[in-house]
Image (cartoon, rainbow, N blue to C red; front, side, top):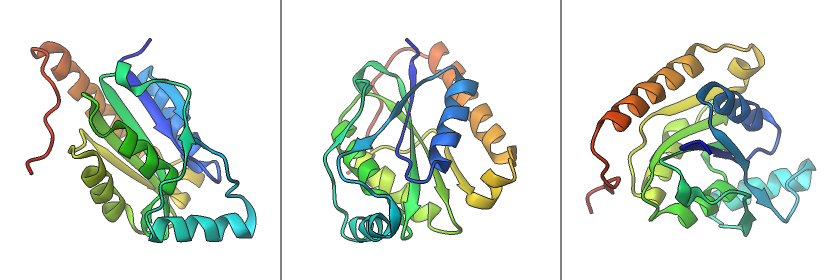
Length: 173
């Protein structure tokens, strides 16, 4: 088992694609957040927007226990300039876990900073790194930002391996 888990929710497949690439490049385990209610089609699109606006936390399921990892790389699409509801549910579940976090998002154009701020608030932890990729960057297979994200996480992993083991510190209250 790897010490790193990439966990994500994807409606359109773009976030899944980035998550798979990250897991492969970082030799990390991969897990998808699943929800019971469909979010496909026009009705699903409206559901996504409303859940993001009203900060809904739907019931979710994952295959892996995040407690056994040192680093969780959490990926989300940006919905209506907000964090996707399935990822919000996941982050609330792992809020107290003694792990480090890194965040990535996929988006049409804007909202990444707001989403990363929300993720930080929900977990109570600052991320080791963040990555925002637009649909255009993903479609063009532009890897510059993804490469930098991977390098940052590799450096942090090396530093963490060399340092004495301590619990991840939450943000100050």
